Amino acid sequence: MNNIFDTHAHYADHAFDLDREELLKKLPESGVSLVMLASSSVEDTRENALLAEKYGYIYCAAGVHPESVDSNPDDYLSIVETAAALPKTKAIGEIGLDYHYDGCCREKQIRLFEEQLDLAKRLDMPVIIHTRDAWDDTLSILKDHKPNAVVHCFSGSMEMAREVLKLGMYIGFTGVLTFKNAKKALKALAEVPADRLLLETDCPYMAPEPFRGKRCDSSMIACTAAKAAEIKGLDVQELINITNENGRRFYRI
Image 1 (cartoon, rainbow, N blue to C red):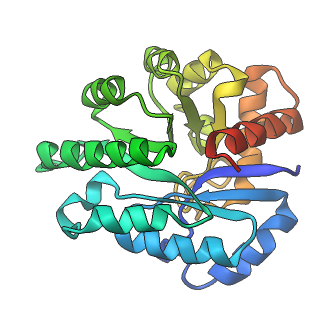
Image 2: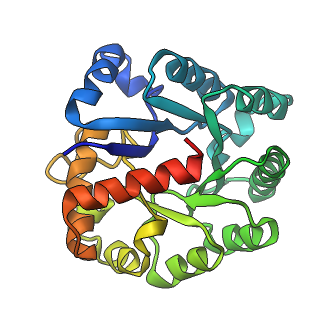
């Protein structure tokens, strides 16, 4: 397979510290033609910009994940905006809401989310959305702000997918599609038109079968694509080509 676009990866993660350069040099040999690096913090934002500058096939996003809300510097928005002006920064993200852990401050997360949505609107940039155990608030905010967005790492219901699609947004799927307990995500995938579908790894996380439990990398999208193609009734390479085109259109590459 070739022409793979991994639309959401985290190669600044410490999981790649020992072999990052070697891996990134070899990924194109595995059929990977494009990678989008999502940021989780201001540190990530800076490191991803450096990786994108170094590797021609890599692009990046700038933003702060909701889990970083308590460690976020006061001037984070100006840092994100500065990074967003770089030629290979193509989106704001990943941003959103995550209520998974007890004790999270929902009000702070909502403020962080909305500030970055406002920035994306002002800069006319697409947005990468993260949501976990926070769907009602996320959907309400998305309806208010109406960003050009992708809801990444989608494992929600068919009904949730329909709500995203009504807003004209894209939906990104990871290796979750290959898991034995992925019935809900597979039903959602069946609802997504081919021109609104993105493939991603969220690496180093979410490695698909048969690599589940191992460190994930962009070459493993081939496994996810095979499952998605089965559900959509398409040839695997055809699906990869379609999602590559979708990613290019969404990120304006």
